[in-house]
Image 1 (cartoon, rainbow, N blue to C red):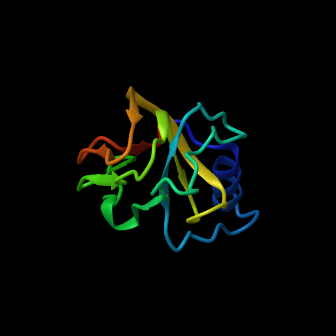
Image 2 (cartoon, one colour):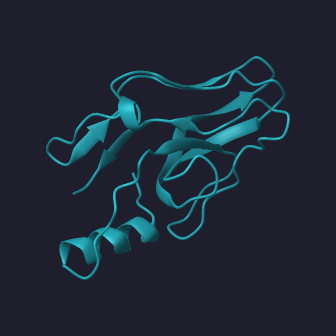
Length: 131
């Protein structure tokens, strides 16, 4: 899974003793309708009258082992109260709204979210790896 330039720079500076990186109090997964780049998040689903909000995942993610962390339980966004459109990507941020994008990636299959639908990441399907 790709890492944002923001996170890359923070980790490198921290490890090289240039500047301490303060751990986020919580991290959140966001649903996106377009792809992110290392510098810019994709288009996030609208929060206006849609029932959409980023979902806190801090407690769902495992402690890292061999350079990998993954969700140990299902992560669910929704249910939608109106159409979210076609969700193609996701990103992890360090804030419930706004904030800094840390990680990002594409869904294995796009999903059109209509009213009463939800976006679900099965246990083990959202992972972070450093190689």
